[in-house]
Length: 248
Image (cartoon, rainbow, N blue to C red):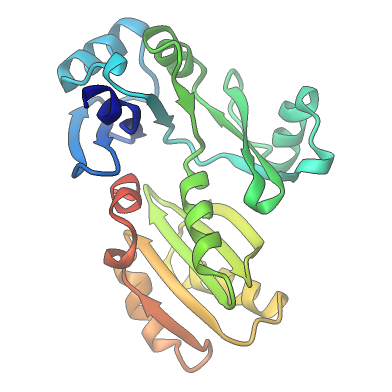
């Protein structure tokens, strides 16, 4: 019985601006969430080992361990065009401000026929890998895109996620990804006009708007602009619990 429980358990570790969020979850148990404060952009191996010990979780108890970095620096490349040896060049072409010394990685997105190329702090990546050798790194955008593809079948969904001053804007129509972009969130109007521009560019007739993160001002201004965009507003509470936790 114990082996069966462990087989389905996953430990997700998400790096945030002010610490690490640990979440243990399985198909049958409620998520166990623990947060450890740690400021700064990177951690050493010793620091991360201490943080993991403080969390109380033991990686060996889990079937898999996922690490989601805080960086929102990524680009999507069609799988047919992806060449691993050119990943760094492709990312720097799409994201010229990719930090020097960052580790460039890639993650498959088969539902979209694409590869996500992203970067994370090299020191943190080395520290996490040393402490948890079989850890699996996942770009922050991947869980959102996976969920987006499941709810955009037969319709159009525009998802706006805002956290730590960055807006993720994703658009999917009838199960096909049209846009995935991260941009600096200057103001609600600036972000909403970018969304409206995408809706107009793709000639979308009716869009369902999904909001998550720090979107209170977006929600208020979206209501005021409802006459210009046909939309149905969804609240973050309608997201799956695991995804809500990831976005916190």
